[in-house]
Length: 307
Image (cartoon, rainbow, N blue to C red; front, side, top):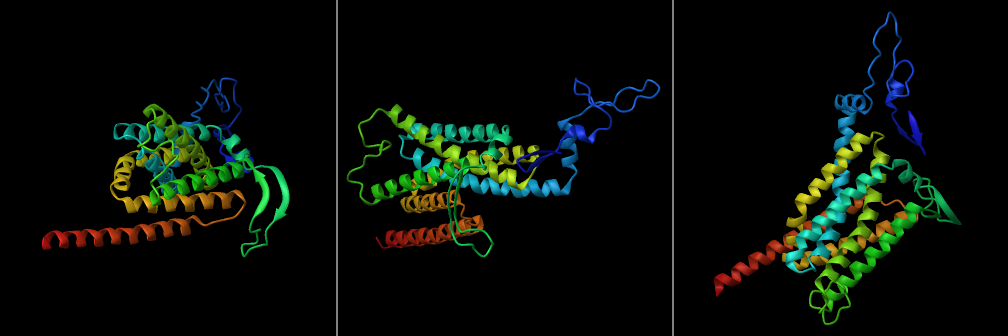
């Protein structure tokens, strides 16, 4: 087994008997002119994983986690793309999700680098009180991952707050993506893509570190990421259209972004926020809003019948 900063990765050659030739072939003991045993490499690992029930369980669990993490990314992309002229929305969503896939695959190919992002780069020497789980409530030993999460959280809170302010008081807006401003459309599209790239990077790093923490097998990580991004592609247009056609859902989605930004900052400071609590709260809020929408539609039908 190879180990990179505490994360173990299987070495296919270690499963072969005998020595390895410079050409990458593992040779068994040659007796009586017997042909050398062929080296199957990664294919051997994939075949062994395909018949391993534990590997399938890990794959299903990781796919669910990656899809859930992708929802955060997708909400942000949907809100930004909906502020563009209609003829550019789908293209920007496709670009944003494609960039998310590319970033995740590139990061997967540099596992050692990604794991290295968790090593502290400086420490302010401050820590919070020890919690029930035996760890400080927060720490100031920051790694590059922590700094990226904090920066992404601040950006999300700033963006969501700005959008909420504009929704409450739309009289004046300095938003570069505001459709009513007399700006060149290509600048709006470029600004949207740039902001999507920034958040894609944050969510991609969070996604890959989650994958590394759940399994040591690279094929499982790649399959889970591909499935999650495929789900994002299929859900992008329906989700964006649903948000655009229901103004109250826009406010709910912005509230989600505020919460996600706060959680990213908390995790950057070493705080542990169980993901189950976050997504349970989001699901509950979405369910309540769904009931409100049903009630509004029922009232609208009654008014139509009375008139």
